[in-house]
Image (cartoon, rainbow, N blue to C red; front, side, top):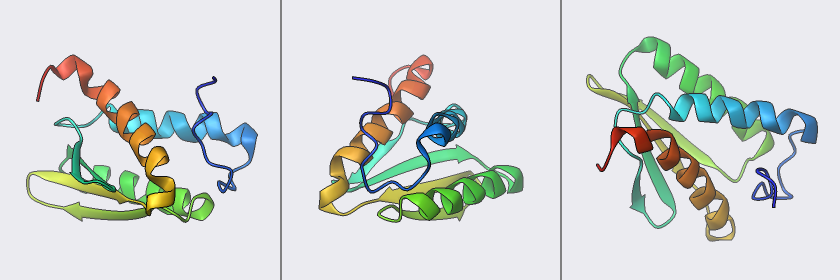
Length: 114
């Protein structure tokens, strides 16, 4: 199994661009201030550093991701303490959400147990 085998067939991002997009997600995940949480069975919550730069970067990435994987629903909320990114999917794409959440958890592993 390759690193991108979990990407669903419904993704319209050209195959050669997928590793680059995944690297963008990994870079965003590396900035998390806490481990991701499974807010609901089909929704993951990420807390990223507060501030306009992080919010803009996050909004840009999720907008582009929605262009190829419209099954994701993203909500970006900027609070005084963090930029909160909620990622939701329908039941048919639960495995994709869980794979993305696993990558996010791996990125914060150096932080220790949360």
